Length: 145
Image (cartoon, rainbow, N blue to C red; front, top):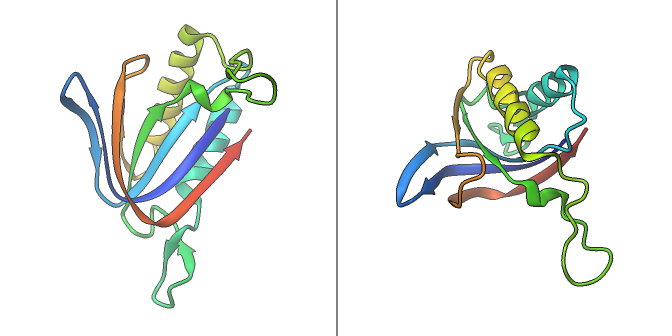
């Protein structure tokens, strides 16, 4: 499981010219599965994302979590996070999980996220999505499990 976390002021995802998910201040999670994830892995990642202290406190230090700032989450599937570019000029996606299994895993991940006191929106798995975001400072992290 690989997640790119971006701290955003706002973000939205559009499919066929229709906004399917939109958040205000919070985290945009670009997520890819390799198909080997357990429920424990999904729960660990959800807890990690919700609890990350990446929002600024009164002293301008990254010291507050999503829950502390009443933030929201937008989850967007992104199998290309498993693109291996070490050889040749075309990425290899051998490490990416089977689409059907990955879709179910992402759905389970979103269900776990929703057990926290956090508003969660999603993109549409397998669709051609356009993601629009406004970074809240250049904060981008990669989390692997």
